Amino acid sequence: MTLTIPGFDHIRLPGADGVELTAAVSGSGSPVVLLHGFPQTHLMWRHVAARLADEHTVICPDLRGYGASDKPAATDPDVYAKRTMAADVVTLAAALGHERFALVGHDRGAHVAFRAGLDHPETITHLGILDIVPTLDMWNVLHGASAAVGYHLFLMAQPPGLPEAMIAGSADAFFGSFLDAWANDPTAMPEEVRAEYLRASAAAVTSIVADYRASAGIDVMHDQADLDAGSQLAMPVTVVQQDWGAQLGYDAAGVWKAWAPDLDHRLTRAGHFMAEEAPDEIAAAIQGLLAR
Image (cartoon, rainbow, N blue to C red):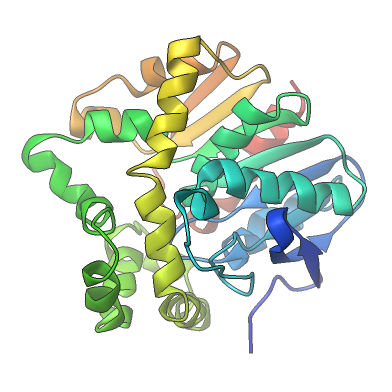
């Protein structure tokens, strides 16, 4: 049985290109879409979503390739391009009657949100980003021995076949290692939630790898084209992240400022799974963003 956010409706909605997504929806008021990260599902938003639903319509989809959403075969690079996944989100929101909405993403969902902000500036009113730098910048800041922290990025960038076989052969150990290593407060992820993440991820190895593989190819091309064109995010942007700049030797706020002129950049003491470890802090950051 798929776990979802208590008190939310769990519904199927259209994405792009005939793909269907599953989403948890509740609340009323101005719409906010929350996109989950790896190796998780929309369930990661359970605490934050409940807080926001008092004043907003909150929509928490499983990304294509994850959770209970469709997992199309990666027949070409576009299938899991963040451009396509961003189109999923815009299509899904429109199906609920929202032509404009705020968008917040964590980890993989943050890469989708970033692309949506660039591709759909007329649709995304506010943009929240949790614990990433844009795809192009991500590859640029990973160098030397410190890049070992992102070994999974390099593994899943390899041609189809070997990564999928290696991960499927030890799925719980592979996905569980990130749930363990990236959490500052393991108690924030109860056993039944952890089990749901492991179950959902083990059932989606091929599509998860395809999502990551796109970020080593077509997503870089799209980011580079926007950088060359001088494209920037037109809406207010809030970024909350761990102090990766200090750990990896780059100016994280400066990286984001180049893309987002209207930027609120914050560091957190919470771990990577900050929406679960520090939901009050993250909900307050989102509420502050929506007030701008």
